[in-house]
Length: 105
Image (cartoon, rainbow, N blue to C red):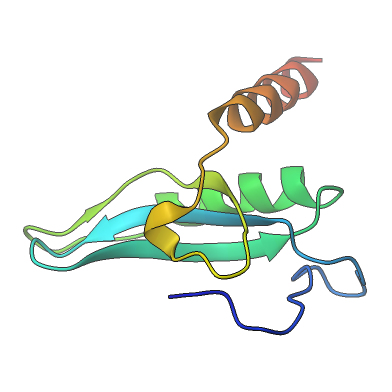
């Protein structure tokens, strides 16, 4: 689905920053596949939304032939469809490492 022509804002309540990232996971029922969106966020709110998406994924129940990957961080670009969004694995690793370090402290 292409980005709408208007500005999309961070999903965090009270945040007025434009959304730069999409937290999403690849989903398929065996026939159709798409990105399941967990949130849109600005850079400041990214760690919270990324971890929230990972936690929400844990509670998903799948039916036979249905798949749902672990949520990742995708860069939002106006006019681009979900299939062309760039995944930022480097940010995922950095946020995951930071949260692991904080949890063990």
